[in-house]
Image (cartoon, rainbow, N blue to C red):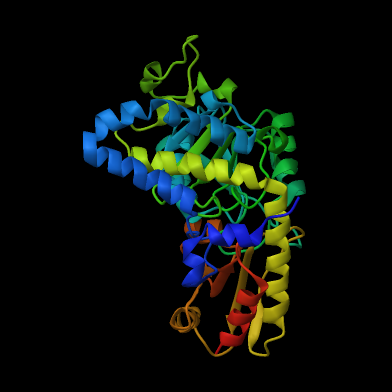
Length: 385
């Protein structure tokens, strides 16, 4: 099974107007997702938000089911929130840590590190930044040594960093954490929608994803999976408002009562769209496009590609000699090509925790998705200054 690229582009209106290579920032929304959002807003226009939400109750419940199918979870273990950062902070802040040491990867997303630093100050936690191996991935051997020392209350890892191509060995980390009895929190905001995800195979207790990136959902949508065995141990008393029919605590008590219903319906439709395509064909298509783009860029004399990792994602980072990343981004935007910029890994966590850390280099970030074409990659390479 392969992705029908022509059909995907027909569903993606934006491909008629722009070469969109910023899927790690915010992907182009497919027409069925946009239709789901707009249709609900039109209904709110006609009957008001509360009645429109009541009419959509069954479809809103289906959103949790679709997200659960996408990551191998169950509907009761999934909550829908407004951003990946909010979802991550909400879940982690509620986790009952039984030991004071928190282990985190060097490429942990900067917002996550800021949250952990605040929790460390409040609760007396000790934040331990794990080493990278020679491939730029988290050193699982170092992780194992830290787990063997004891006193670890949580392990946090960003699956795919915002400024690098490497896919972290999350399943290996999960096995080590499960054997040690230490909760494992995985930030999958950059991997959901481009890589197959299964929370059981990954061994994670908490997984956070966002809608706007490779999942191709609307902005202002995200979700979090919390393993059922942890739900009864989470902190806030609000959990009594979110019990299932059989009395079990559900992850939905993490949700805000007042929220954008149209966006949630769009997120569910995006999950269904991804499920219809299949995670494996999407991953295969993205992998081929990303490696093709790296080859195209490497052939340009003034360009240096910075990607590392044994397994690499659809994010391609590069620099152009003599040009700042922001200059390259603006130049490409003038050619109808969307890219973004990002700091080079692996120093995200270290930079936040150590004020003396040197400034990180900022590079151009081009992130492909299955609806991109080889011709678009050629156009990017040819447009470089």
